[in-house]
Length: 211
Image 1 (cartoon, rainbow, N blue to C red):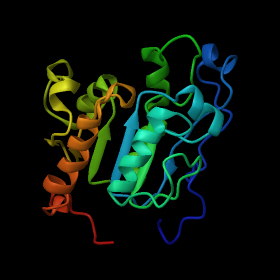
Image 2: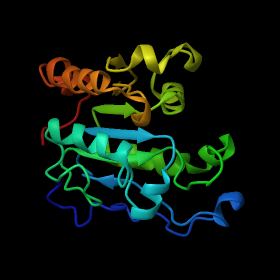
Image 3: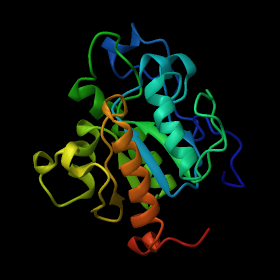
Image 4: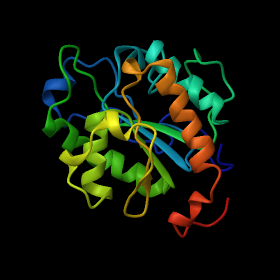
């Protein structure tokens, strides 16, 4: 964890009473802001919190899908906690979503994702990661608009899973939705990062200072 960081949960002290989306304000249990190492070189971005993450207040925790990601983070050396930890001890990784609130009956609407863009943009600007991991098709398309020169509709999460896409200032390493992954796909993602990201100096994609 960054030496100057006090908290892993919502480390940038973002608004915990945001009311920009009236349809979500009345039904949400909590706002789930980002969690992790603010000096991390990897940022994992999902679509919106699960019901389990809403209960724990921490992205990608509390259910089988979250445990899958936490297990992968452990294999990559980003987590020192068991996969079922509700407040994982992360280093070099940050977890967040396109939308911070969960509707119990539907996915986030486009305007709700747009309302949350300032939160995500601020996190990415302050963290300045080398690698962004979009989890799922929607996260991939949204990040592609901002950080690649390809048309968003040209991306297919099934085909792009466990590959590296050169972006504008970042590299994207897409991941299939956690709840849909097979063990083989989980292994493929971990192996790709170990063999094709860690094995080279991915930091050359940015002019970032050494940490």
